[in-house]
Structures are given as C-alpha cells and as structure tokens.
Length: 339
Ligand code: ADP
Ligand code: MG
Image 1 (cartoon, rainbow, N blue to C red):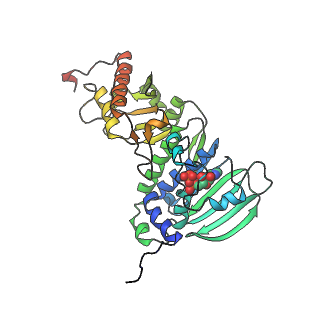
Image 2: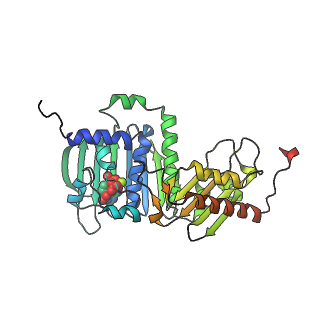
Image 3: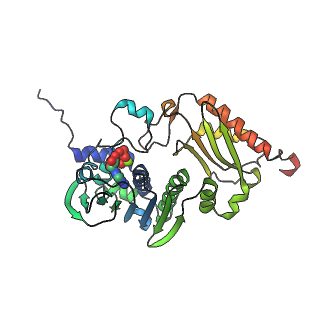
C-alpha cells in the first residue's frame, strides 16, 4: 500500500482556518480593528459598504509595516506579537495567532496599503483568494489601510449563509461598540455606505459610553471600583430602574478585551438580586484587569471566551463590589407591590 498522506497546500489550510476565524463581515471588522489597536493607532476609521458584504475597510494611523512585513503579514502563523510559547502567558496585544490576515485573504479580495513614519513611500499589496495579484510602491499616509472586498467570493455556501443587511450591520455595530468601549483613549469613526454612523472622540470611559448609547445613559451609571490582589475592577453598572428586557448592554472587558462569560454574568445578576423587575436584565460596562499569567485566552480562535485560573474568587469579588456600589447609591430592593 502506497503512502496517502499529504500536507495541505497553504491556500487550502488558510481557507479552513478562515472558517473558524471569519464567520461574517463583523469578524473581519473585529480582526482589522484589533490589528489597528495593536499597531498603537490613535485614530481608527471603519468603512463599511452593504453591511460589509461588499466592503470592510479599516484605516489606522498606527505603526505601519515595512515592505517585507507587509508581504509576510498574510502568511499563516506570521506574527510580530509573540515569539515563544511563554509569551502566550504575558500577552499585551489583541492578536497573537497570526491567522487573521491569512484567513481573510484566503476568502476575499484584499487591498493593503501601509507605510511606516520613517519611510517616504509605502507598500500596496493586492491579494485575491491567497494569490498575490500585485505589489507596488505607493504614496500613502503613515499607518495602514486594509480593504476587504467581496467576502466569501470563493465560498458560495458561506456567502449565501449571510443574513440580511440589517442583521449583518447589527453584528458589525456590536463589534464596533465592543472595541470602542475597550479603548476610550482612541478616536473611532464609522461610516456606512458613505455616511457617518459614529464619531467617537478620545475621551474618558463614562463619556465613551454616553457617546455610544446616548446622553440619557449618563444618569443611569453607577460607578464600580475595586482593587484587590486578584483583580482590579472599574466601570459602571446601570441603575436597576433602567434595566431592560433585552441583554443588550452587558459588557465585560478583561485586560481591554471584550469577553463573554455566563458565569461572571451570574455574579452581576446575583448582586442585583431583588432589585430588578422580573424579566429585566441589568446593564453593565465592567473592566477587569488581571495578571495576564492568570488567564488563558487561547481556548477559542475568536478569543471571546477566556479561562481564569481562579474563577470562583473573581466571581465573589465581582459580586461583592457591585453590591457595594449599588448599596452606596442607596438603591433599596423594590417592594413586592411595586413589581
Ligand atoms: P496577529 O494579529 O495575530 O499577529 P494577523 O494576521 O492579524 O495576526 O496580523 C499579522 C501581522 O501583520 C501582525 O502581527 C502585525 O505585525 C501585522 N499587522 C496587521 N495589521 C496591521 C496594522 N493595521 N498595522 C501594523 N501592522 C499590522
Ligand atoms: Mg490580528
């Protein structure tokens, strides 16, 4: 019997990886915006056309890339962010897998323009389905612009699976909110089909929340601040009387990364125990700062779930500090007849 095992060609491997990293246009938005943040951009612009189905473009004023790096950035497992396995436990960047650009380029038409401050001219690379179409010298501002067009052009099943423009836009805005909330010190602008949707100047955290969710939000925010050896908590919870029927405004950020955690969510809802009308959900915008060595972010390609060494202690501290904050604002339980 002859040998039958072969290594997959890169473009096939990239397409498979893309299946995990890129579910929809919003995934591209997340990856590109996170790269811009890792490049220390202070202004990030997001341009969308047709709910991202035609175009997702992110323009930043960050570090830019050298000619060689520009080309390498599309290789799989090519990253400037970690060098060794140990680095995984002291992450200070959003990215580290070196998969996003390779994955995106495998399933879309990508145009990169990038320039470092010190250089006179920049690099432009066009890639379609992992094939480099062109690489040129261009005049372009310092920073990076990546335009992703015709997502899933070579995977019709995926393209057909995309939801209505309204739904896909919703996903994009959710992703935009998450990134913008995690980084109030960065100026974010979003345009959809040429029109400005958000313009969020650099600000403090409270102001960022208000700029996103509207001026009425200001009066409903109760500050939460706690510092222990395990975690530093900062942010806000919404006053109980503003609780909504939907779970919309619930945000945990761990070391500036949006995460989902049913367990920690429960810590909050139990801190609100007796304060909420049935069927409503507290809103919260909470930042948890922990030692990077006590978490594992590498359990899911999109990195929205992370593993904490000591989840139980975190739960207890979170619950207690939210309770404390609610107590300080003299929020008494709603009486039964008020329900
Ligand atoms: P990762 O972010 O996990 O490193 P990516 O595929 O997202 O992997 O990006 C690959 C590399 O390309 C990054 O490590 C970075 O060096 C470079 N890069 C990507 N986007 C930008 C950007 N906007 N500005 C500067 N460098 C970038
Ligand atoms: Mg990345």
